[in-house]
Length: 481
Image (cartoon, rainbow, N blue to C red; front, side, top):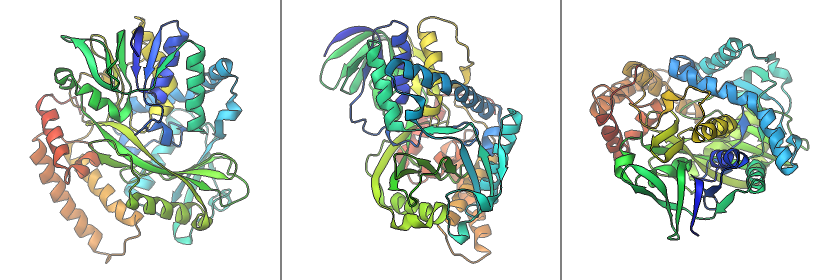
């Protein structure tokens, strides 16, 4: 397959599809490149929760950069009803067919630690109040559908009526149909290299050997974007490297004859998103998700993660999951920039980037698709995306001391999530040792820069990640803390 197009979009996940659709609707010739099976895709394994506030954390609210990121999520949430209406106009697929949950119940249960779970629960309340959003505090004894183990019983609960969920697989299929309806072209292939002359990108080279030429190329291939970027080292050196936050999710048979009506989730917790359940097809629920930092995408489920997630589902959500059927095990790879922030906008002439969104890509897709398509067409953008520019100094939102303290708290919290049994004085001793270890390790990486907590913790056992961090910090200056 060869050809010349206005735009080549690399990546057929929800961000690539949404952008391709937005561009095709505006009359551009667009080819979207990606393997039909979507190996490593985060979109295909996502719970597809449409929520900004349920994802809010105390650390997010603590910095101006984090609050800017939250603001993008709030704006995206407002666009979803209209976005679903346009998809219905394109395909005949109604919102009712795509939405699987109406509203979200957030549980603060007895698992975890106050410094994360309780703090993040309060942060959700704070963000809802800040944006004057509706919510309802619930009587934990009357939360519908759940039946947790007594030791994991909820302590508090709230209902967010405007945070819904869609079926990720059905959303991807609907976006594909809409893209084709507007003249979009699919290339069931993968990109091995950027075609460029000097610092100008003019197309892509496919694994099949074909070349696709375009006035603009958009790299929206999630965690796989780094391999494409590495084909031009002089360009890759200017952009924060991408790694993978790979996670495991499950489709389980529902332990009750009726489906829950809402998303049921905890606040975000140790190094990951919160435990969450999303109703899917009749008699089936989605449960997710783990999060492990890796320098390259992962495709195979790990025993540790499977055991942990099944245990969480049965203990914290519904005891009858213990006898549920496991219908599918899914692995996805979230794209994570080394400084933890999205990579959005022009990198070099002819090359745009739309990745690094970590856990927020699906939720942000209508907003970012509209914004980037306008900019590609030469229009003035509506959003301030300067913080997320592909060519930027490393972003650090907190002091080293605070980052180390956060990493320590999250590490200890994983012990409680795994039901560890240690003498009562040991956690304090472990925290002290971890604090010293993380501080020394951060100093070894760089005297001033400190990576996000989950990357700092993961790098201790990943020499290749340490090398990436040292190289990254050696070529940039710190953004303001």
